[in-house]
Image (cartoon, rainbow, N blue to C red; front, side, top):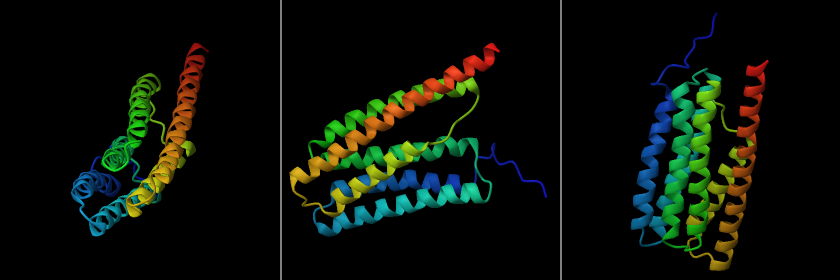
Length: 193
């Protein structure tokens, strides 16, 4: 039996899960910023865990049931970045050093959006996330969860975790920069042949 091509579909289970993550990101931000006690932070933590689980599940469903779509290749990372951005913005309210992480994150994402669009318009292909992007996501989620769950963590330890995130974002930025340049150079070389 021939596999069905879902690349042009918009309404798929993985895409619905990604849309759900967008809603969870907003709910998380509201819950975290309104938290007055331990219970409020635990609820925010639970929302973030649910978002992370949903992220893993939508990828597995997309690959296993051949529901990878062009729309999903844009929506899934957008949901990830919105969630990460909202979590960082929420954490700025407790950890002032998080402003540095937010600044680096915004710079990286702006560059990646520009270069990603350039690669798509030049090559016609939307390349998925690479291992260093996935590692960066795990580090950002992991440290954010620690800062939310242990909301009375000493400032020095919080700043160390924020520093680890900054290094991870910069490493990811560098690796994607090199990858974008490689893809564009390879495309130009193939076109010239």
